[in-house]
Every structure is written in C-alpha cells, then in structure tokens.
Image (cartoon, rainbow, N blue to C red; front, side):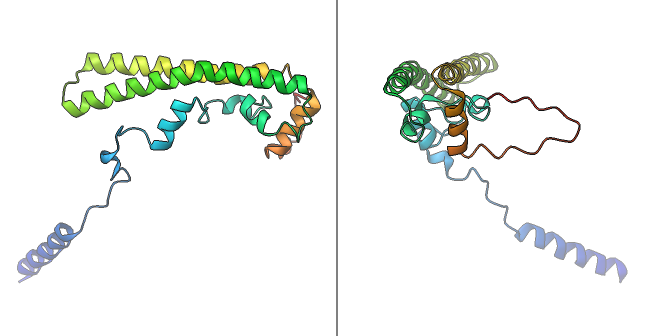
Amino acid sequence: MVALRMLVACGLVAAGISGAHAETSPYAGMQTRGLRALSEQQIEDLRGGRGMGVALAAELNSYPGPAHLLELASALNLSQGQRDRTQALFEEMQKTAMPLGKEVLAKETELDQAFASGRIDDASLHRILADIGRLQSELRYTHLKYHLAMRSVLSPDQIAAYDRLRGYDSAPAPTPGMHCRHSH
C-alpha cells in the first residue's frame, strides 16, 4: 500500500512537471531579425558612426565628446572658434567611425550567415571574431581619441559645466583619510 501511494505520488509529480511549460527565452523573437545578433538601434548606430557607450571611460571622467558638446554649445558659452573646432573634430570622428561601423556590420553579417548556413568551423569562427574584435577596438579608439582631443578645446570651467549639465557632478563623498585627485 505504501509502495502504491509512492508510485501514485511520483506519477503525479511527473505529470505536473511534464505539464509545466518551459519559460520563454529572453531571445525569443530575435531569430526573425535581419541580423540576429544586433538590434535595429545597434545597426543604425553603427551605420551612423555613433558611440553606443564605447567612450564612457572618457565621458564619465570629464572628457566630453564632440557630439554632446555641439548639443550643449550655447549652454557652455562656447566661442565661435570652439564651436568650429568641435564641429571639425566631430566631422573627422564621423569620417572614421562610419566606415568602421559598416565594416563591423559586414563581419557580423558574415558571422550570422556562417552559422545560419551551417558552414562554420572553429578556424572560420576564430577568424571572424578576431576581425570583429579588431574593428570594434578601432571604433572605440576613434571615439575615445576625440573625447581626448576635446580637452584641449575647452576650459576647466566649461568641462565642469559640461559635467553638471550631463548630470555627472554628483560624485560620492571621499572616504575619510583618503586623498582625492581632482582633474579640474
């Protein structure tokens, strides 16, 4: 009798488990995208030469980027010379970033198609990923380099104002006994 109850209990548990539905993957629906590994926004950002957060190391450490400086030019009281230099640096950045973004997209397409067709092996996977990594590194370098260049265009007060306008001025209080280094 105990064995029968155990058998019935096990059967009910098994039925409950087999009747349960697996949770949907957070990736569900992405298989229908043109380029499965990237969203439409990422694709547009790469085509447009936008930074997509690759220059946060600079941006969040008081190295403004040319695109945001152009947006805030009036609020920062940029002189005409500063505006002209910022515009020129922005255009130079775009001239390099846009082709690199398109190359990243081409390599991501190659990777996607290699998997979709089943024609991928370890050697081709390694080669494609090395190419993507090199291109992403160049793209990141491009954006960071122009953040670095902007420091020579701005005064320390303009950089501090930029940080305030972008909401970066609420730095945590220093730990007692620790020395702070200010970049302004």
